Image (cartoon, rainbow, N blue to C red; front, top):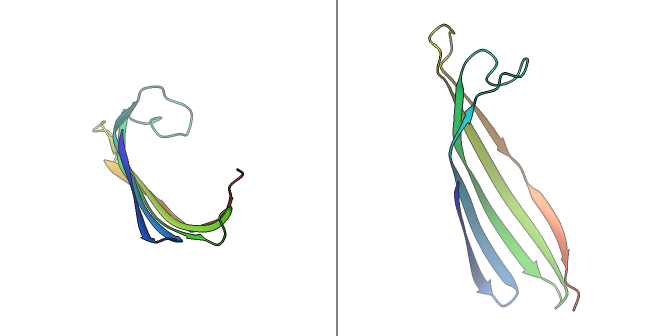
Length: 102
């Protein structure tokens, strides 16, 4: 996998974070019952991205909000099944209180 994060100060108390990761590839060789890879050899790839905003209220307390998105694509490598691919997308909103102890 490959990943990176960029942090930008918009003001002394406001910060913006942009992060991302790319899943280069994953092969599923075992065949657990009723799981991905049970009917066919499977490979997966995908990405994760996140945008976050932080607001520093005091020198020891901040609020942070983030919007993460994750997408995983599966490819099935057997001709005997009707489907050849599947995808999952997850997204959400994360709100955090951040305390810093000196």
